[in-house]
Length: 203
Image 1 (tube, rainbow, N blue to C red):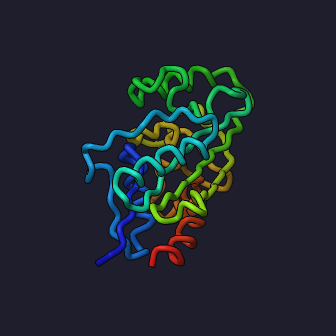
Image 2: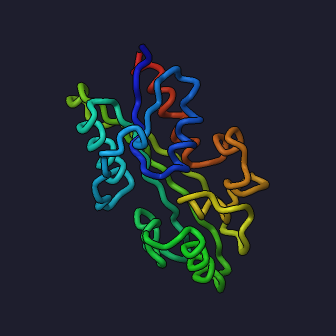
């Protein structure tokens, strides 16, 4: 029987991206769609690490399975302190549609000449029988610029991927293939570290 790994995210786009990246590890990848009774707790941490830990530990306790959680966001140079861990709740708010969120964000950026930004991703892995070592963290970052216009159709729950152009890339994340995104994205970089660990750990 394959070892099971639960992806502790309610974001369908993130769950798909994580699943695709981890498929070559030979694990049985589960998502919260397999556990409809589980509702994630509030993400009230002040850092990406804290929020990722909250989700990973919660899902691990609820299911007894190793759980991998993601927390990510964007840091925009000309909007210091306004996004980061609050990215989803920025401006139009968590209840806004992706289109409404992105429209508000682009309006906020319209007069900005400096459009530099950095995406940050922290993955947290919680395991039921590894309490002495604690949660494992994997970090990824990528710098780039915010475009003035949408560069690709908006993906569910990750609208910024349609307007962020990573340094060295010729297209936004939302227009990339899974292979391209794994190379350029903050989540792809964190996942590479997580995969190296998982290959050794979950045997």
